[in-house]
Length: 529
Image (tube, rainbow, N blue to C red; front, top):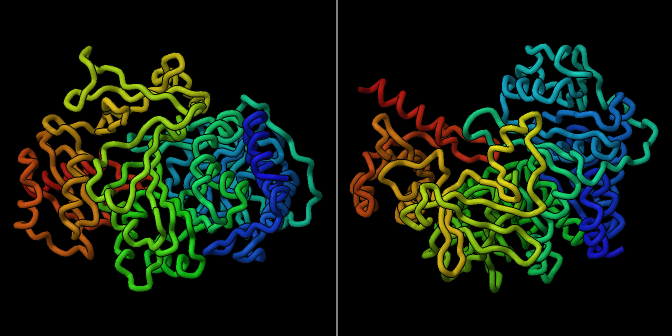
């Protein structure tokens, strides 16, 4: 069976996570999947599997879930320690017709408990580490149908390890427009929202990215470093496996560890979180050249700075290497995109996040916030429309409806479109600061001028003045003279505040929680006043 044939079937029948491994094995059972870690749920599986072995492992886990009592139409919250088996367990739950609710390992126990309450007595699939870290202190017996752990033993739970060898179960296919997978938003403004994806919406989202992978003339390995719980992970794995591309699944983000993996497996395509790519920038100077084999870098989730793209592209030895940025969010999938190239990325306008993708992909518009036409100096609301929009927020339909206007979804970002149609995203609406056209633009420019900065975030201070919060490589003290020279174009900025990078509050996708950072900054400045 050809990948293109399976892809066409997905466009008609939707993407069913529980069937994906089996479909990929039908395309090419020998495609390798390599891990940089052992699987908690299947420690005997090792770190290198074929797609056929991967599919059998998912089938095995599905049989264990069925034996534990999980049934079709049930919700099962998957929240365990960071590991690729999270994705496999979600696929296993989907395979028996349950609806996996994928919660990040980065969420604290109180947040997880609140989301479990929102779902309404689901099953909980976790591990002993999460239970011991605080989850067990909450009344799980009252909040859930059952608590399952992937391995080991814990009072009041059933261990999947003890159910190995359970009889296999025929797959159950979810209806095309009913909930198939539930993920959550980043939670930058409070308790995360639960985003409902259907087989139809998941399948449609593959369209623009399937075309992107046509750039891969050779079957080079694809390195994936994104949260295993994220809706983007469903698309990334689907595209790579159906294209018969070897997959390298990375859990670790430490630059030295990543360099070793890249030197060993030589990926041609890298998809990673923007902040991870930023952390890996210094590897561009590594004499071993870990990025030499990379033809395409790709990222979604958040804005990425031109400096980061330029450094990575210049570390590749591949002719025509490019960085493809996709702008979107969990609710809309990929909305617009653009490519950056080695000779121009350093001078690119980082606020230009791209153009509408080919026919059949999302439509994008910018609407007025104040009755005046949107422009660079009067940004409007960015809105997206297509059949790939998420169906709803689970148990928060009114909140979903607030952002939905017919076919159009308001993203919460503000920006404008140029005469050539390029979408410029300037800021999140909630992060706008009076007197600053775009905080993200300031960050792009200054980071490009000061190589010693590892992070820069502009947030409102106690008097709503724009305060640059900076982090430096190895926490080296900031050279104030270099700083002043770099920010001459931005006289409205207050004096910078330097903090260790480890103190930055982040979401599960490593975005800086700007509201939380502003609150932390104001408390800090109040203490020193």
